[in-house]
Length: 204
Image (cartoon, rainbow, N blue to C red; front, top):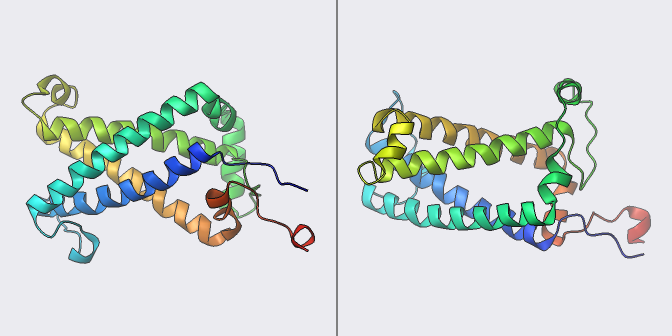
């Protein structure tokens, strides 16, 4: 019997392109941060990309455009196809608290191809953080040309803090996402093939 498609090609392509772009953005961003840190620590050199400030900025801007274009295409697809409406909504407070409690006690069941309320909430939050990190990044990149945007963030210095906080939120999401993949590895293959993993009975 032919298995059903649970992750459309557009979603899978956006996921992997986004993974590459975000990896480059984070590592090059950490190199830029190290040149002028806002907190009393620096990221280790092995976790950075670019080699020097100019190289890190070049990587950061290139990855930024890849992330923005990919994000816009994904957003258009998500809205036009109903993907966002079907997969991420509704998010009800009661269901979120219930699933969060189950997750904290390791009793939250995971069904491949279907998001629980915690996952839906996390994906919506990280999408919003993506918008925030791009907007604050643009205000830092062009604080004169985009003075109105920098002004929305309270000026250049505060925009840097917003950018860093949004980045930290996205990095935290990625860390949890990778941890869950390690704990439930059967979720990885469907994001490559688009189809649920075959059960032993099906495979035989």
